[in-house]
Image (tube, rainbow, N blue to C red; front, side, top):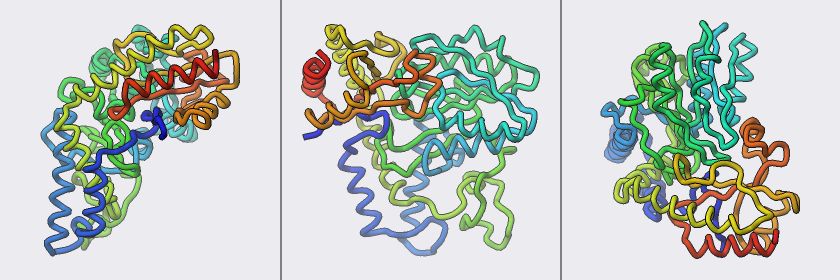
Length: 381
């Protein structure tokens, strides 16, 4: 029996209702939205709209049309960054960003778009006092991960949002690790975009992502992909209204049905209950691992301002080999390496060897944590 501790990559298992909803769509519905005048197409449309409503509500907004769907958070970030930035623009990022942010920005350098990294502490927290120093006259946006996928460090979004308001900058939030895990209030933070994925903290299926977008950005943002929307079909120009402007082509309907069920599941339990359970397991893991002197935690040791992601390293063996031993000999699934965030590892002083990452979810148990600590003790000593 596998002990799955790679929930920062994708949460597993999914709630049974998610599986059933996807099966129901495939077996009983099968219709696309805005592509037919029959009952199953209308039913599918209702599910899509309700899913937008629940996502908007999750971000404390009451305008569901501001939610548009993509394949994943990477596509959402690419759409926003490549659609809003122009030659000579400058962007601020943290030193903890994922390649979903950094690779698009490196590509945009070909268009004379530049970026500056704001340093973070060795625990992975943004040093907000250094934002002013990094700001330039041509700075247009701050693009920031809400929480690190390596260390679990949660950024001070309110301080960052206040800086953006003071300077008139767009705030783009990468909520890959926090949507469904931590509250994100767009009325309070006033971001221009919140990019999310559906298969991590939202407990939906892979292949589902999206973004919430402000009215200000929606009016100027260029679509990444254009094509059929089922609306204004007598015209060859992409509609300018939301969400059609950013949703060309057939939507991932099985994925939306699954995400819809996942959002209902989260609503029934509440984000607080899910987060509290994950933090209980994180506390247990951190307390127990302190007794293993050959292992060190990379990132914060406290529960304050963190998610249920813990990275470790040891000098006694190769970390890839450690992850392999955990999987092969004990059935414990983790992830080793760079986690698609090389500069985060440089900040955390775990580059180039990386770490072994343990990430806990709602379906993990205290017994699994005990077994994991026992396995680490037997392998590392």
